[in-house]
Amino acid sequence: MQIDEAVTTRIQQLLKERGWTANELIKRSGINQSTIAEIMAGRSKFPRISTIQKIAHGFGMTLSEFFDHKMFDE
Image (tube, rainbow, N blue to C red; front, side, top):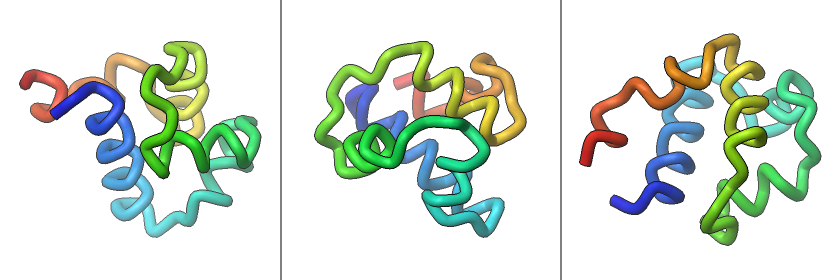
């Protein structure tokens, strides 16, 4: 799995676990809708680490916690 695919999958997993929509993540992370849409649709092949950090914080976790999943070990 490519890193961009893993990031998208991880976001989808966390949204599902929390019962959130992408709109809830947008509100909590402060990232604009188009950026989240690009990442979720797989069109953003190289999301910035600062963007992923904001997403992680939106989920109430650190960047390390976001990447602490077996899908990133592959």
